[in-house]
Length: 211
Image (cartoon, rainbow, N blue to C red; front, side):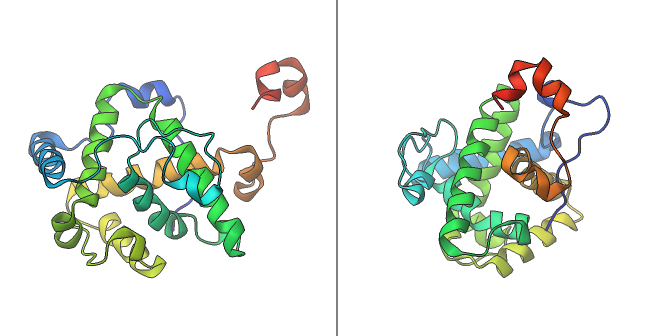
C-alpha cells in the first residue's frame, strides 16, 4: 500500500516528538478527545495489553505491551497486510509471526514518542476501535478481526485521498509507524533496498553490532 518511510533531511525522531503528530487543529483535537472519552465509557479496551494479544500468535510471552491495547493489536493485525503488501511472507504461519513481531515493534516505538504524540495516537486508535466511528468514519461494518485485506486497502485509500485533513494525517500516522516498525528491522532491510550499515561502521561502533 505504501513505500517505506523516508524522513526529510535533518528530521529525526526528536523533531517528530516536538510537534503534533497528527496536526489536527483545534476542531480535530476536540473531536478526537470526545471520541476517546466515549470509547472509555463504552467499554473499549483502554489499558495496555500486557502479555496478551499478538504474543499469543507467537506463543511467546516475553514481550509486554506498554502502549497498545488488545483492540489496537487487532487493528494493526488487520491493517499490516494492506500496508506492507507483498513484503510479507506468503506462508500463513510465517506471515502471522512477522505481523506479530511488527506489532510488538510498533508498541516499542510508540513508547519512545513524547506524551503529546502518544496522546494523539491513543485518540486516533480509539476513533478506529469504537464501533460507531469505525462504521461511520472508516466505513467498515465488520470488527477489525473480520476485516479483509481488500477492505483494509479501501479504508486506507479513502483516508489517503480524503479532503479532510484529520483523515489524511491519520493515514500518514498509521502507515509511517507501520513501515518504520517493519522496514527498520534488520532482517527486513533488504526489502527496502537498504544494504545495512557499512562494515567499517559496524566495526567502529559497538551499537551497530547490538542492533
